[in-house]
Length: 546
Image (cartoon, rainbow, N blue to C red; front, side, top):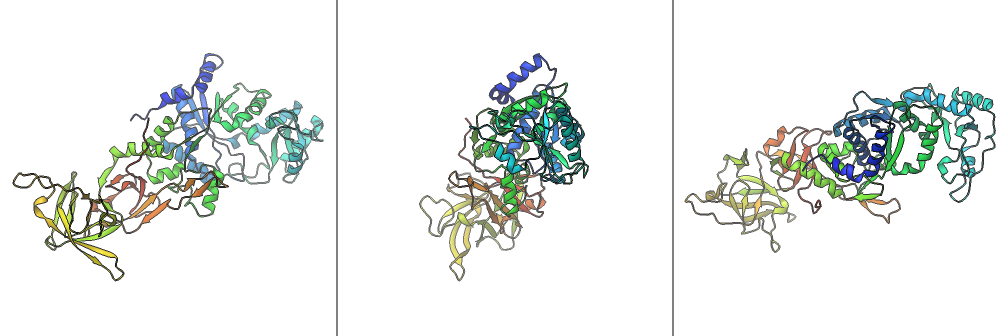
């Protein structure tokens, strides 16, 4: 399957392309987009969709895409997140070249722009508390009430704003607000806050500033300063577009960016909101931002998802104005499509049951050629516990008393006895083998070998390598009736800590991809160390691409 789904991006995102093409014929010469994450957490699959759209559109039109850290809120941002975001975008396959920017780089310019608005009579210093401001805000059906401080003179506002910057006032005592329209039907236009006081140390600017710009003010200015032509953002910012344009139009910028919104991507059985993700991590329900049960980029990477598969999935989902939910199975479909040809097929037994082949010579080991690799075979082997039933159900074609099965690449064996412990648990199965059935379907005399319906994978017990297999599923289940919109998945992680693999797994490397026969696609965990294998995805799915 081709990775390039740009035709889907072009077809489904016609509303974006028509605007870009219109602008390129008129006021613009080249497309310039940006991806502007707030460094308050790691990226998730929804963020990756925005990365895909911005970088791929820039590629389609021969333009550029910046990476910009929107670090205007020192209370939430950390250097760890700044580095993680860069690593994740590079891993996804995108390069911003030398265009890494920070909102904090523009704090001086933001302040100058705010002063310009004050001088134009378009901004004022307000003494209302947050509670008083909310009370005066009004509602959709009721206009707001103008602040009693709205009529301050330009001189007084300039003085107070400078004193705010100089740290003369405590947090929460004053704000700088735009002077627009408290009766506007768009609540974002009701004299929004431009600056708030926050005596907090910033990761980039230290203690230079004790006032910080609001996102709605900083974001359009960042775009204009960087020469961004099209600000592509998610649909919740559609109501913010008038304030975006208001700031741009009332300030002197050579490039006036155009904001275009698209619907966020929702994926079933997942959590993507950073507030929820932070909560799950803080409560110990998720093992950090790179927990393989999460659809964070780091989590998908640790689970073994190929970046090309993620890109192809993002492309196939298209882009639109309408909210829609994508099945998690669709993501898994693309992962399988990429892993199938790239994975080495090996045998690993996750829940082992000992099998002794009583008529096989004691102490003997023979090397069998299985799919082009040498695998040791011996008198004692391990099979999956689920591959044996003492009282087999109807149509159970695996091992049972008196039944014969084929061992993958080896011999036919027949169960003759079982051994149980004091509690009645089966701890060993005893079999005999037919030496004439070695690794084939034709007997030495040329006649066709008898047919059996069951073929089992196995590992030689003396030669097997102890491994730990982590069987991951989504952390949550869709449950709209739940107050928080989701419930935990009790089977999100099953740890198989007695698993055994064929000897070649001892040399596994983090970038290696394996298909554990009948058990799924696995990769070596890149965090814990040792022979811990994460199941990336199971072998089969009912999902079909149309």
